Length: 629
Image 1 (cartoon, rainbow, N blue to C red):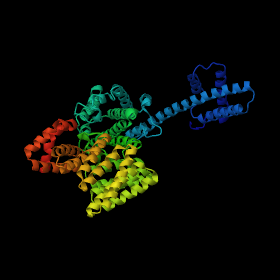
Image 2: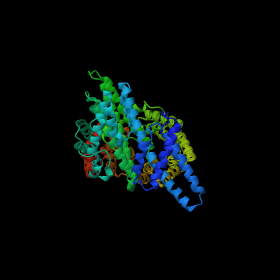
Image 3: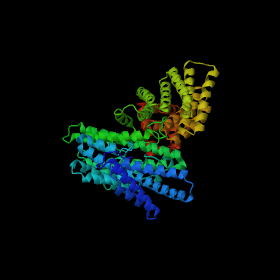
Image 4: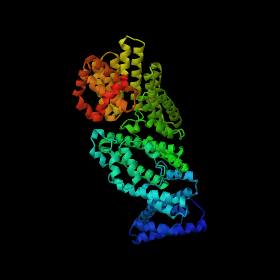
């Protein structure tokens, strides 16, 4: 509905005029002189003045109500038929009126955006521009309106508007160059390895996109990303970057990120793969922006003689882009409340992402989105072995989720806190958190939270029973039963992440009970489900546990194979847990001898390379040396 600004003529004269306009369009329609809806739309454009929309809408509503009443009470067939024709004509006007409103709202939005932009303090202009194109806003200037926004900016007499106009037009040009190549890189990769990882400079999207764009700035950034070089270093070197170039970069990356998510979300034939790739996309672009912000911030606070205010605005704008992406991500149904930052992709330039994402989160207040992102970061920190910081994140997320009324997120954080307590060997607290999660999840009907709570409760009770040296089998049987309940529920839900957690917990529990053969089956299943969900931490952890089970069964070749893969995957995501399989491998090396150990590794060389590549295989001896040192 348009606003009700007071027109120059009286409201009464506008009402008479608009009733006449409606009647004229209806009469023209009944005479068969209306050839298209566009003709109706143009009559509205010419006949309705800006600022008087409410008056027109009331007039149209009166005619619709009166005609409907006539239809409801009319008994004469001829008059009824005419009334129905009038109603259809009025409904056509109603549809085109909605279009008129949307078009003029867009025009007003563009106009007000430009006015705010040129009137604002220079340090605030980038922030206001990014708010206008933020997909989280109820009124947003979308891609289709960018050309009109650029033209509106170009017509502004204020010089401050021109860099934004130039940046928009260049971004539109760059997006046209990239659009046809948005997802073609996917078909060059193995289906099981879809994502942003790949051989540096050869696989993944960045190398392909670099070849398509003509703008030097974009080519240079894409090359850095393709080679897995840090965006921090790249942005720190941009000491002469202009506002127009930064705007071009921001809008082009936004088009790529939104285009990929839209395409992946449409993978109806394999929605789980689509969700995995969408998660990867959200996280990758958020991290790239967070790292760009860090680099710009280094320039802004450095000693170089350059426009620090502009560079500081670039840093702030980059963090703003990070938050926009994270806010959209947190609202998706597939947001991984029980996953981490490393799920769905790999690559060394993402390993230190946690600190970068934490910075923009400090700039936002307590919201549902913040609670969910903190949950994601907390899980990732636990995977790295940073238990104290992980616990802090989950406690913060728990408080924010309660305030925001996000009950599934509240359950998730109770579950995560339970798992941290197990890692810290405070099993009583772990049981307490998991019991609270179980009660709340059942109250809410949160089946996914319930499955995880059952797994955590059973897992905690097994460890507590072992710590207290219980020998009664009933204690362990009750705990195992809880784990089995969690597994069955996660299987019914089809949630691979939770299945992997339950299978992993069962495998670990049976290892504690000195039942390695039983543990083996559970751990092999845990590895498969973790691979499908894309959680590298669970993959590495389960491979490590599998190596332990094979070792206890004296199956040394299989133990070496699983231990090598587990060690490598965990080290790649900076998880301190890599040292566990490394220690086991060195024990095996000491038992069989160094030469025999090398032969056993060579037996599995092709299998290992198929998973982690030649570089990964060559890195294994260095990891063992690092552990030994």
